[in-house]
Length: 259
Ligand SMILES: C[S@@+](CC[C@H](N)C(=O)[O-])C[C@H]1O[C@@H](n2cnc3c(N)ncnc32)[C@H](O)[C@@H]1O
Image (cartoon, rainbow, N blue to C red):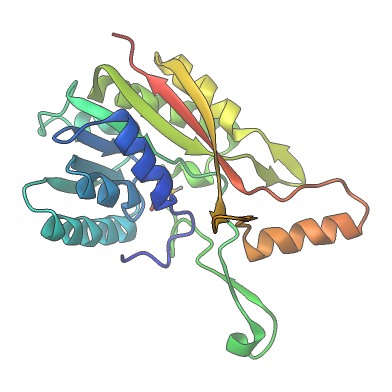
């Protein structure tokens, strides 16, 4: 899969579980902020048609490459990726015939401009440990990016995206949104609650709220998966006497378009 440079990919197991649970073969799955296309790959692998949108051309290109590889492995399924602002979903879908036809929206909005990324150790840098793949754009992010939005703009942006998702879904269709709390300026931001508020404001009903543990299970032991920099920050804060916890989960919010 192309996409090492992307900072915040969805865990394929979360995408695969949501697709199996909330759609069936032949359905269409839409991801309005698809990044490098994890949800699209998993949808195609399960015999669903997939439609993705992302704002940043570099991720669109990678998502197209990934969707094409998935389609080659699973013939008979359609996959398409377009570049655009998910706040304009209704016009992006205008010529696709998908309005009101999508069975499942599966997406993960960005949380904050910078993520933990991946470490380059001192063996690679020859000096200090360096962060890489931690930004939502390797160039200058586009002004419409939800990743660089202030909290009120992010809330309004999410509402606009979810309103488009509601119009894309068939009645009774599901929207599964993964998100997680993040820390900004030393404060914990309850992003999942903001996602729920935005979905309800857009006209969805909240069907379920679940938690996906980001962990490895070897049959005997559950080992949480925490990024190098997150663990480092938590250890430093604890050493300074603060009560902080490492986060190793995603909130999985399930909305439904009313019948
Ligand atoms: C958390 S990432 C999604 C990653 C994706 N699930 C994957 O596995 O690659 C959020 C994505 O939202 C995109 N994004 C941010 N603002 C957007 C907007 N207004 N319209 C469309 N995409 C946007 C970012 O470019 C980023 O790729």
